[in-house]
Length: 566
Image (cartoon, rainbow, N blue to C red; front, side, top):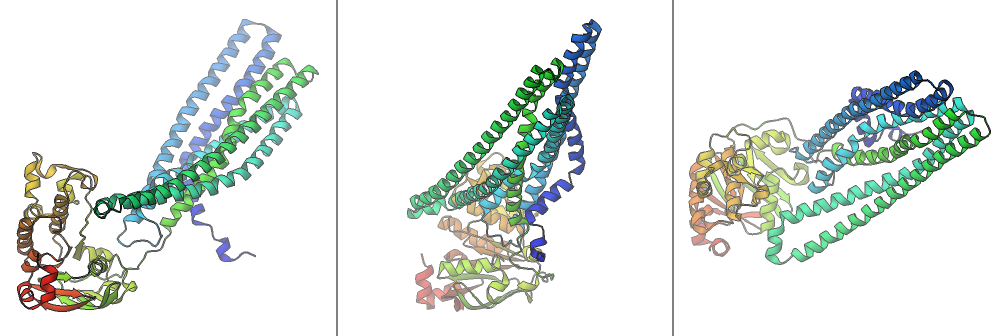
């Protein structure tokens, strides 16, 4: 007796069943039309044999004209049924692939990350290639059924001429499918491994593109390229293996199909020579032997495509069924509240404790970059609350008790390496198109010079990752987006590291002015931002070691002076 776990369907199978279930209408129509196409194709050599038989007997022009009319009807039926059948199936295939792409992308973009153990490049591969291959099942099943119809019609027609011909087709088809079904399992396992290695190579590319500038900075680009070459070579070797398996499968299928067709032709010739079938039946048998190659090829290819679709569906299930890293609560924080960090221990942070009252502008001078990154990650909820000790409270509510959507609406954490998207300056600053502070955010972030440089102004085009902008322009664009969001609590992590000192001074004053009365936290070592803050907290060795204004700390704390003075 099987255990409940063993009886439970695998997620990949569930995905395929879902795809088949919601396209049952399109698949039914496509199967009928493709079956009609295959039946028409099969009817052509049958009709040709009958025409030869009756024309030789009657030898009349009317019989010839009738035969030509019948052939015209068959050809028209074949043409129209193929055209409209494939149109229905390909539309359903494309639509279903789009649905799965959206589902996978939605999981990847959820505020709470899923514990799938995959990088963004791998998720991208799953959302594109695997989604397409999974949706191919919509075409595979109707083509499989229609090919079976063609083989059965051919077997019946040949069986009516001579039972041995019909049995030869049925037994030969069963033997071909048995051999190919064994080979298709190898294709499925090889395809899964290939997709995994391609996804890892894609993830490596995404990482390299993101870190290319700093890699060049410290000379690590050659090591990074060697690392990519290794994973890319592994993907190439696996692709060659898959191509070899597919080639062996296709070659075996073609050889077996040709052997069956040759067997039918030779058997029919022998029977005609012995006088057991007529000349018309011989013509029909030879025509069917040639025609049956196509449905047999389709029929023999189907197990391969089914295994590929199943392998891709199982990879999609890695994303779709992965549990969330954290389970957010249902509460919402009160508007305009304070921010409290209470004895947090995580990474480089140890018993970190401080509070930012509502409406205050606080700067945190962090001596160790790792501690700054850990603090920003916790506030951005990239680290689930259960992964660290202590508590983070917004308006007195613990982060673990709040819904992630409410946290995002109430508190915005803008990273130092904020992404820039293809579009325009305006769509990067205000993606939703609802902000009422775009102009003020542009002024405060000193992005006005970029806007003034271009005749289109805020509608100037921006390439993917801001490729047509300098480092300082990208950073100010990211800052403008954070300021335009006008959130109750704004956390900025090193927002001015790529701008010059004069611009930095102006930006610091502008932030303080624009955010007056709103809670603002800046994690920075910039003297300009530290001086603009109401209060400075010194974070050293994971704890707050000092607290005062920037100028008082400069005057009385030698370590602080060495750390931030430029």
